[in-house]
Image 1 (cartoon, rainbow, N blue to C red):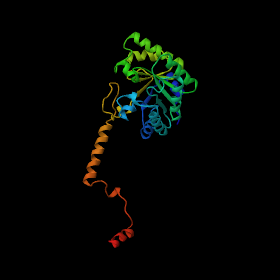
Image 2 (tube, helix red, strand yellow):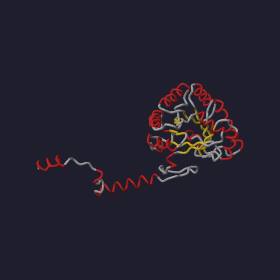
Image 3 (cartoon, one colour):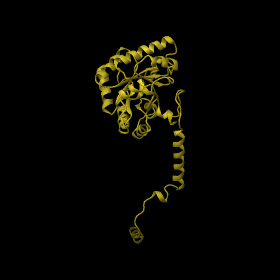
Length: 279
């Protein structure tokens, strides 16, 4: 089975074929997603909320991200593993950023995702690609900047705003990014941006015309119930499944119904008689 890489993603763009991406934070989930044919598995900083219970994504550290990246990478054979670089792990200076990004790659990531735009980000992306580190950009709504943005607001709602996003995307493309996530961008704006780039775009609530789609797996599986984004489709109700299983297990344990005869071990009759003799 051929490993998904930047060349594969670029070929899909040229052939006008779509690719899929989902988040994963542990070995067993990553293994299932890989077997299911998901092309990109993102170790998203969303794990701060859905796996660690933090208030937002800005609370997670690079050291925590490395642990989860290692776990995911061990479960993957085909998919590209991408580590989401967390808040302030790449902002202070280029040298520190490269050190942290290198640690993510050493943890098993095949690429990293970096949020934002501006000359510093473009320089960082270029430095990474010069060093052979594949980078996915991320523009539109950028969760790590939520305190500056002031909330979950749709970006690129006007023609002029779309042109600004396109300019950011082109500079990320020139810096060497092989793909760009467009988050919470109107479908028409995302379509225009996608058609004017040679690299792939990945929709996260940016409509149907991007080259790929990415969602948080806990939203897709129905496991995280605190809220559901408008753009996320729920394919299952894992929370209910887990709740029902746990509830039934609790009842079976307390009623003596678990374990059953099929779920216990026995000693040989000869050994059992020794117990009887001793009493």
